[in-house]
Length: 142
Image (cartoon, rainbow, N blue to C red; front, side, top):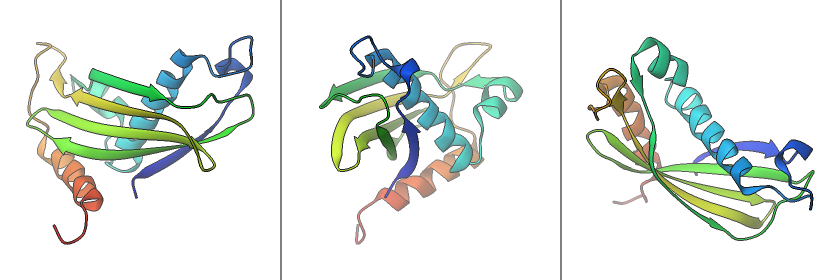
């Protein structure tokens, strides 16, 4: 099923032609990831980045745009956990308006120490929460 959050395309997201200017999608995608960490994993970016001394930067992002979005369009962003490594995490996000797909994005995030800038293992409580998400996404019977 995945984690679903919604956004409405606003004037601020659009270029003069009235369609979403592609960098604004990246802001929406990042907000979706941030919401997922807080709402589903129970670990806010504030707790991770400010209080915890770690960071979760994007190491890879690949996006396929399939249709434009316009002012007023309701968008559903569906995030799914795909793979968990020692310090990395692969996610996918599908964006649609109603039944019409607008884009698909694949991300790799890396858990790093802010002081060293190096990848470090996910802390066990966060790792356990991500594993629960992966298990929810796994096809039944595997």
